[in-house]
Image (cartoon, rainbow, N blue to C red; front, side, top):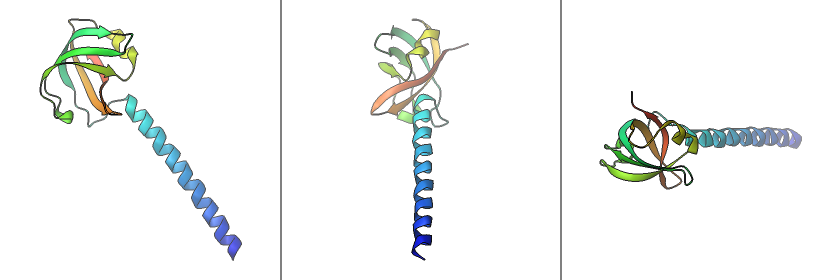
Length: 111
C-alpha cells in the first residue's frame, strides 16, 4: 500500500511542478504584452532615449495606474517599441507597473 501512496505523491509533485512552470511562463509572457487590464492612453512623444530604453510622453490620464495626465519619462518593456515612433508623434500606448516601474508595454503612432 505504501508504494501506491509514493507513486501518487510523485505524480502529484510532477503535475504541480509542470503547473508552476506554466504559470511562470505565462507571467513572463504577460510582462511583455499589454493585457485587457491595460487600457490604451493617448499621448505625444516628447523625447526618445533608445540607449536607455526610455520615452518621454505627454499623456492623458492612465486609468489602470490611477495617474492623471502629465509629462513623464517611461521605461519601455522592449526597446524595439521605440523603432516605430519619433519625437512629435501623437501616439496610443499602454502602460503597466512591472517590477515596481511604470513601463510602456505597447505603443504606436496614432492614425
